[in-house]
Amino acid sequence: MLPHAPRHGERVELDIERLGAAGEGEGALVLRVGPERALKRYVVAVRKAMVGDRVRAIIESRRRGRYTARVDEVLRPAAGRVAPRCPHFGAREEPGRGCGGCTLQALDYPAQLTVKRDLVQRAMANRGLDPALVAPVRGAEDPWRYRNKMEFTFGDDRERRFALGLFPTGWHNEVIALTTCHLVSTVTAGVVPRVRDWAEARGLSTYRPRDDRGFLRQLTIREGKRTDERLVELVTSPDVAVETVSGPRQAEEVARELLTAVAGFAEELGGRVSSAWWTRHVAIAGQATRLESTLVAGTPVFNDELLLPDGSALRFGIHPRAFFQPNPRQAEVLVAEVLARLGAARTVLDLYCGTGTLALCVARSVDHVVGVEIVADAIDNAVANARANGLDNVTFLVGDVGEVLREHADAPWRAEVDAVVVDPPRAGLMPKAVEQLAAIAPPRIVYVSCSPASLARDIVALRAAGYEVEGAIQPVDLFPHTFHVENVVTLRRTSDAALIPASEG
Ligand SMILES: C[S@@+](CC[C@H](N)C(=O)[O-])C[C@H]1O[C@@H](n2cnc3c(N)ncnc32)[C@H](O)[C@@H]1O
Image 1 (cartoon, rainbow, N blue to C red):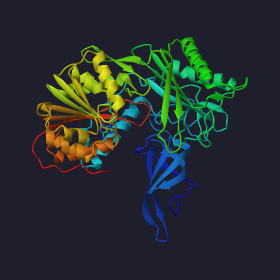
Image 2 (image 1 turned 30 degrees about the vertical axis):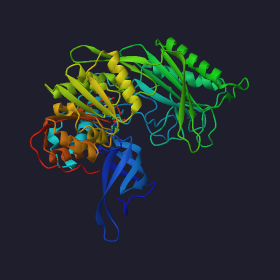
Image 3 (image 1 turned 120 degrees about the vertical axis):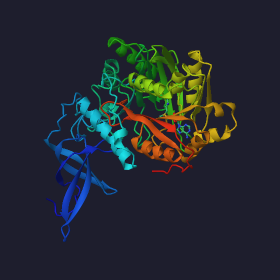
Image 4 (image 1 turned 45 degrees about the vertical axis):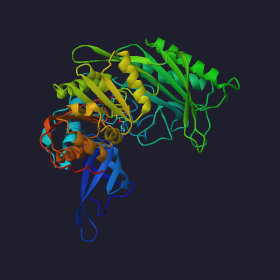
């Protein structure tokens, strides 16, 4: 046993007890340290260690009393440990490994769901809430190839070779040249190495942020899971001419050829590119970054559909900058959960509505939906999608939730709201938003959350405002093989308790 606190580079042995907040496997070392040999407990977060493993780990750093480490050897594998499907999973120290896409791939899927539920239960317990409220996680029928969007970066790999792929966890100055990926479709996964080879063979340069030089920045591939439509976006520097093996050429010509090649590769792999965009990333010191986009081929948007529980479909037209649920199949599960919890509500407020996915799904079964979102482009998209689906009972408002609700204190719809859906970003509800919710005092709030910690904090704040959790807190796994987990909870108004604003943290 070590006679001192763990030090950089030291090897330690420990059991991995739980999933850490950033997806690492977390365990503790209890050591006798110092001249008095006092008992001390040190929390160690081990990258790519699975809950249930016993590992030998190498200490890498210490921040705010918490150590991080990497696996040196798995001494006793967790019960649910499996061989990872992807060759890029693992430690960054090994060539071609350490991809930041999946952190839990070495656990079988049922074990992943168990550790995610435990993560949510601990977040609730940390705020004094009953962990028994947390239901088993609703998992995906198929936890592979679910993502409809992936942004691949051009850059150098660790050996300074031309690469197209994803960053290793925590590193943004090297890229793993992906040969495959099991989170995206076989078409997307197959296109990436082909584009890499194509671009390298033509002597194209990758953009280097260090010295602001080079041409190719990113390739984003998005696809409809219920349609065979695909949107591809190539992002480059704003250079007008670029070096190639056959000498300098017009950037636009090269970008068009690359996008044509992508469409050809997709076709070889059985897919169709319906929309191809070239975007020049213009960053000038002292000015806001501009993205100048040109439609090179096909239609400006690609379409996808979400199925509602009654079997009807909603169609979404998605342009390069628009957000759309990254796992549409599980988004349908989430939508069904929200709809079931809204009960007989007739007028619904959808706060943090984004491009209106939830608002539009709800609009089919209620009289009126009011959506509020801070990003104007997202609202433009939501309005277009409402129109395309023939929904004229949705009103969208742009601005900060707290501000918009304050400004609409006398709006006629406000007194009619009988349920509110909130789906805030990871930070959760700001105190101003909680104040407004308490002022509106809807009978029911359906809270959709991507952060168990901020959800637990906000439940406490809403309880102080007269709400109680109704039924179970339902985790839904939108991102298999990652440590993320979405939650849906219903809060029912039970009293007019005085409002205590949510605290940050
Ligand atoms: C988790 S997303 C919600 C996505 C949405 N439910 C959908 O399916 O498209 C959170 C949204 O909150 C928006 N947002 C962040 N801060 C906000 C604020 N203060 N007021 C209004 N909207 C905000 C973000 O732009 C983002 O679209």
